[in-house]
Image 1 (cartoon, rainbow, N blue to C red):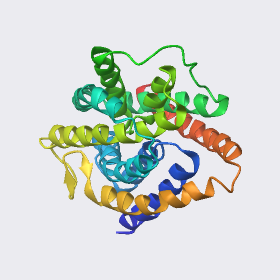
Image 2 (cartoon, rainbow, N blue to C red):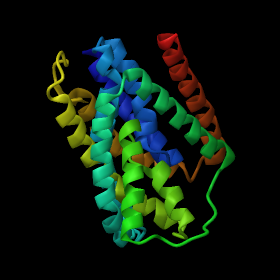
Image 3 (tube, helix red, strand yellow):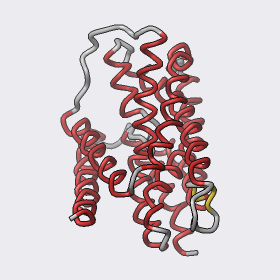
Image 4 (cartoon, rainbow, N blue to C red):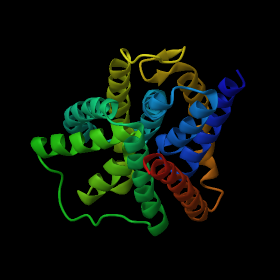
Length: 268
């Protein structure tokens, strides 16, 4: 019961961090859920898959409030959302099947390497130069598929990948961010459905699990993070965000290294 009460508290913190630093909630939520699920004694072979699935389920709710806010400011390019969504749905749903077949150690290692990528982006302020235009329908479907697969494997809404992709294709940054928020919803929806379907037949799941979605964590995180994310956005105008982002990147670096070390210990 005490651990269940932690989820809303953590949801509040995750919402503030996401709003303040502009990072996807999954980057914060997945490592915390891995720790909390282990603390609760959930089956070790399902912990990573449930962390990924639960993160995406929570993003279903948070992404709605996010893209509505961006839409009100005219920052969502809906034609991009429409053309990339088919690939997003196929890639994300397929990614959940891949995740269900992979071991916990592989998923942990993949997530750790993705965190290193995110840390490099934040510490070095890496941004692709806008050197081309958006591709046609086939290219957008292919890009959406890649973004969807990776998002399913790391439990995020895809902004870490979709924003650089759109920036590379000459989409203005503020519109790339707003459009990415809208793209996050089909990613989260397809990921949630996929992790439910792939987990329904898994033996030995804990109580209150719907497939690989752990409902108490999803409800606790989603309900509160939606409320606190706007406060984080307000703080962004009053605090030194660049300095905070670098400090947070160092923290993520430590999290990634710890997770990778656990994989190495388990394998060797």
